[in-house]
Length: 634
Image (cartoon, helix red, strand yellow):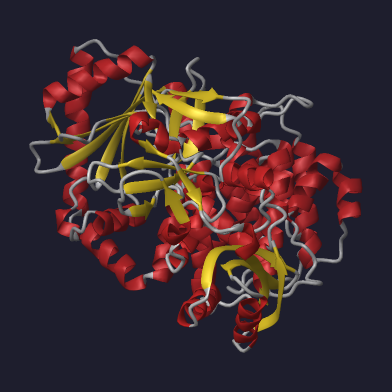
């Protein structure tokens, strides 16, 4: 047995005496022989890579199957061995993990982006069944980032960009903070080398003084807590990651010398009450910085993280972040989702299921085109999250900026579809109200209610958007906020009549009603009349006595439909509407949906004769990027 394997088995034994050491040894030797003669870009043996991946994972205390799959993760792609052979030699559990790590064959893909998207779809789908797939993938990427200096510069930037956009956010969502921090720092090194070197040099300038200050502070804290009869399990200091410093400089628009909290100390105690006692003692020692206290014990982060955070002004001219948590909280913070990966047959950990619920939402979009899927994935991963509660106290994780409608769909699609009103902290709020962490949300439903197209203009979560589109039969994901500006070309007030004193009509921007929608109007304080869609969430807050009866005044026989099939080019809708305005053709509404490789645009126009319709068709046929135009009556 070589020394490397011997040391590795000893490390596994230190946390798992029941591991299958013979199988680990077999996987080690199999991988080493399979990759024999292969070299990395650095010139080192290829086997150094799977071994490096296992070394990264050992910090997370992986089980036998995870270690073996990490050793074997590149065997199918880089050697002649097949998946069937791996399953035969190592069993189906290890085989399925290796399959989750293996890229799709490069066939029948239109572009490299489509290929990448399909691989991510496969990885995430496998992860919903077994989280160990993504843990191996993250360890694989981290080891590759550590050795990235050996590849050409353009590849360094491409890999670093993907790491920053996808891998680091996934690590964050899984609570793997050390992996996330290192991935971000290594990415910054290649994406913004000047900034990385600048921060590195500035940190090195006063490192000795800073470390001495940290040691003095830790000793003072230990003495204070010992005198107060509080048992401290562990006190440790750590430096902030480069990328977190850079991000703070950007967000707060500060230079490096204005960033004070470059170090943090962590205090581990036995119980939650002791966490708050320690906080009180720390605040007696030094003044807390106003607005910098966070109670993640009472309201945990969406990925399960719990701790007390406070910034204090010390006498050493240093602002210090202090983190206080229990042993269990520290274990969860250290290992993230890996703290919940113990499998016994088909038993699943409920906490684990909550931690990867965002994956299910992303995969709801699986019918999307590959490039749309990849963009959706990047957007969803970068969203910050909030934790809100049902009236019974059940925690619900949502993206930051979510509304009561997002909350309703997160509970159940039937609740979302029937949503009419919402109470937040026992107060009635509009359905587009932005929720905050700690809010208690109650949804009021009605069997007569149905989703409104307008909801798509303010809901945030993929799940809510997908369910609303499904309920309304909308096939294309068009953000109403994007089309609203274009539809300002359509002056709908000309086609609305009302009873009563003459006033200026305005179309409400909150719901942006379309032609032929069910509409309602209210008189405002300035004497104008604002027209809303009947399902607009904001009308519940308006004075019922100010309601004005309104209706569309275009005769049915004057409404004509023109169907236009266009190439998917930026700005086509605006170009069409501008052309219609130029030739004084009255456009009442516009709807879009995909049609094979084109976009189908249906225009409702007001035309009192067939000649007017034919004129519009002829004009449109002359425009560039239009493949086909036809007309029919409504």
